[in-house]
Length: 153
Image 1 (cartoon, helix red, strand yellow):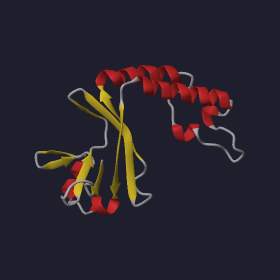
Image 2: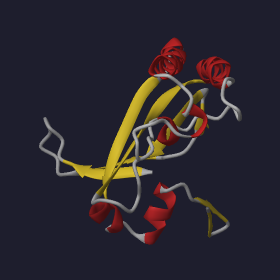
Image 3: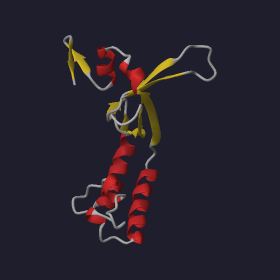
């Protein structure tokens, strides 16, 4: 979930509280996937991702799987792909890859994303503003669901 107080640029209104649910969601054929920058490191947390229709996500999944099948577990993790050891060499399943191999792989992943009609989305939250919300608001904004006067997380 992301929320923040932002002054509207062309409005005479006071600050507005903006909230975006941070989870994979389905609503009327629309899905979104977001990831956060970290929730305990700085004064702010930024979330970014993509939103699009169901068929576009299935298209991306097919293209993505076709690219990552070269990995031993078919699972791509950017923090491993971009990581280097103390000598500047690639690590994990990429340790034997040349720069050309890595660039071609990354280019194929980017083409898979570009081939789907998905739209980039993002939001940020200032922790101080978020923590001023009531407990019920914070639970709701971070994905809690209320059933029978009880929060399910």
